Image (cartoon, rainbow, N blue to C red; front, side, top):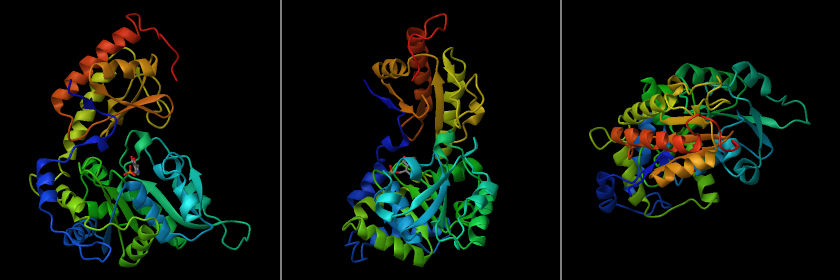
Length: 372
Ligand SMILES: Cc1ncc(COP(=O)(O)O)c(C=O)c1O
């Protein structure tokens, strides 16, 4: 049985064009700084986002980590959203490796932080008791709010608050190009207010491995040292960077513009799910209004929803029909669309969901087990 895997957009397989580019990539030793394919990828990424320099890293987590190492000193503090990846999903790298604390602020359902709360969260540098605020981060798209894209205006507002206090802004843009495509803005515009941006090649852009951090030459030099410190200096890594160059290319092999298809499929999926008895709003910041799943919340490639049934039984029933989704925080389920999910697959997913709900919710729509 062929699987339709919606657990994440990280499950994409490299395209034929990527595999060809990888097989024929010209390589050098990147720690010596002479791998031409890595240099080309870093230059391309920097140019696309309008920054001076780029750094190829193994993952989004490593990108965020080396950005923090570049911007922060031990004992400093980062202001970040409480449900952001940096705060809850990076094994406390900020504390363990960077030696910093996080001031976590509750995000709003549109994935933003209240600018007034950000301004209030800065510590008093003249008070010897307090940590020193050294960084502000935002996540774009913001995963837990159902992948909401954050606007140029919001990014500029947060940057202005940070810069007034002499503090840089880092954007965790694991799905930065989803935010770009969803809002019809250029990557340059969206990145302009930020001092550094990490974006992932290995998610919706379909590459097997890798992320890129961009920023000024100085920031990227310090991030490069940080990457060395965490053992992330690789050698003939042009083999991997070659796939990234394909993803970021203009023309039919490029993977940026087609993200719009993933967004349309996610919306179709949400519209179909919303019609099914037993599917409901996710609650929390994914979808604060209780009741039916609201497809208008789907602006990028995430659908986050609740099920009026035992969640594990629902997911197991889907798996038995070749459809994979994943448990998400607050008792919800996430389905992420990507390059390997077609419009026809959406019809199959909806059919499978209807069948499973029929089994696990029952005709009267009554729960058969505790939601957890
Ligand atoms: C918002 C966000 N930031 C960072 C990352 C980290 O990326 P990676 O899995 O490549 O370390 C992820 C991964 O899912 C993410 O969703």
